[in-house]
Length: 274
Image (cartoon, rainbow, N blue to C red; front, side):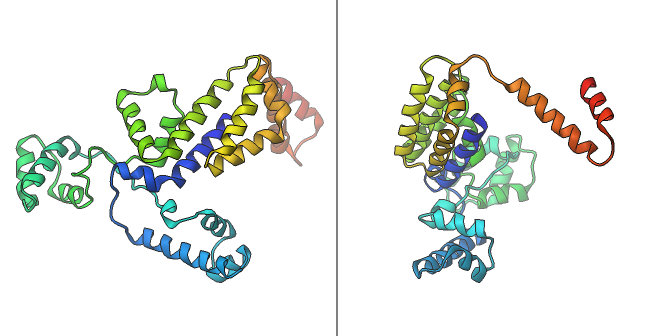
């Protein structure tokens, strides 16, 4: 259940990247983003004319899953992905670069290179030039990636660093859906500790999740309902059949390895030796 929730959380974070990424302005629209906008427009133009999903995929030479993903998206900005920046040697000198560029917008990059070189910078001029042209000197921190943001949402609040907690609060202000997602994730995590009455709390959680504007989480809630009895047992009883399921999985793996190669005697011997 937790693994499925992690996957749905990452999907929700990606679908709302257009709003939470505004905390750290991303790079100007590039070729990839322009292509995404054009593809979204093409697909929705065909859908507005009554063309089916399969026919859209055939006309645009796209996979059916790609067409479905674009069709579910209400606006092209929701498909935008925040750029991922890796740590560089320029990061410790970001404050100096920002102050100098604010005081003198036309300051040459070569002059900035000489200044931070005296401060201990050991990188190249080309690295500094790319750093500035990407707009990273103006940001307080690199743009957070969807995967890292999802990891922060799925981490217990008492185990987060102070900087990460502050970042989550800033992102929640820019994206109300993200704040709602964080609340639902924390509430569901509490149910994973088996206790009496968790089944009733789960029913309330499912109702709450379906009322939120989080489509991916709706699918997770529907999946819980499909196997509700097993889910209720897992969150209320201290016992589980995990060990039994592990033995079954291991037995099936051995059978697949030996299929068509050996008989029952060897299969029995291998299982007994596990």
